[in-house]
Image (cartoon, rainbow, N blue to C red; front, side, top):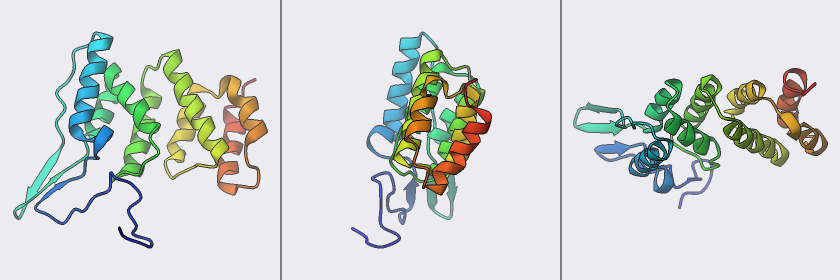
Length: 185
């Protein structure tokens, strides 16, 4: 295992030196597993599933397969209920991914435009408040704060205000934003 600044922090970050470079994750976030979960959600919701195919690019004998989450994000924008569930699961994931910052930011942006149920909003709200209470505010929080502003903090405001680490400048940047724009009346 590598050490130092290039140390692999996640099983989703692989070695991409071969002729076939697949940027999809492994396990629960492999392209096949995402397809299976998407079809299961679509069946449970009574909707017709779209065909999920990863974007590919070939050049000079090499092929790059891009994360299937790109298509899930497009489907969230189309208000696909099964894709929305996958997107919510994705923003709940703490592991790092190839293109993870942009994928998670784009997922949050798409979810902000989607028709979310009250239960989905509560799950997202709880996840984001828990992240702030743990001091976990990665790059994608720039979009997470906007999603949280859109759905509101609701009854979790007192928990957030009472438990946030006021000595952490990164957490306070987003807390102050929420205090200004999302604090319940």
